[in-house]
Length: 336
Image (tube, rainbow, N blue to C red; front, top):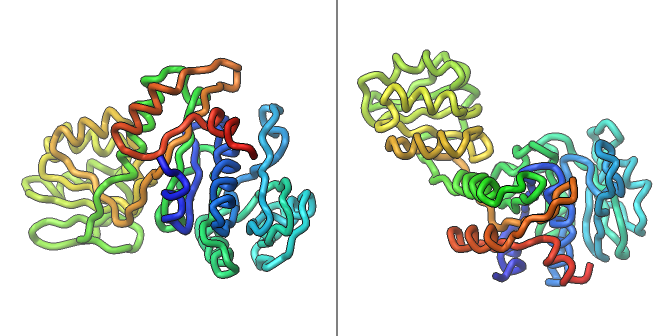
């Protein structure tokens, strides 16, 4: 599977993990190396702190981020000063993070850096656009644990998903979670709604109305809008949860219902409820589409246990036809 060819298709890519210690930084270094060797001008930033040699929570050793000559990067002033490379500054942000302004620069030689970039999605998007203006073809955004919002298509065009033994030592659990996340990232687009003001909107044969309901957590208040109606569409600017979809299914509304969110990062639903809703003929849609374009699997857990990744890799690849690889094996065979 040609990973470099797939990566080249996108100008911005998020790296997200199913759990801490699933190999996101190793994956990031691998993607940097592949793109750099393919003569693709790259940029790198992060919504957390990445590249420290020691995890500040677990005190375990972490891989450091390695940039090549010509690579762009955006990091805080604090970590820019600690870089182990020579670089040229292109921009210093007006906004401040908790550890200083964000410096956008270009590496003059290869070496190690700590990346701690913008702390909200709008700022990340602005930083991506800046690096692209300065010459980056593809910008990689490393994510914080348990935060998927930067993977929204409003921020980046595609996602590389990291999972592995840190998430579970069970092959079936890793497969179930990964398949579910890929399915969510591939939901069909909806065209009856646009980016609206915050709230819940309902479309019936009578047209589209904005309800007084603030979120789908108030799901019982939605019943009166849709009871007895056919081909109902509900759009929320917030989150879609298990409790809402379960209620719609139990009330027998699912068969005539399409639930719409901004993008796949707004669906906080389990595989069980997802499948139950679809089996009840309910539909899930998004306004903006994005997708997971590759999966990396880290076979080693923080406690030292190792899993066999061959079955996970082959099954995900067979189902979705995307690049899937054991990140530790791949990196060991690819000189970094």
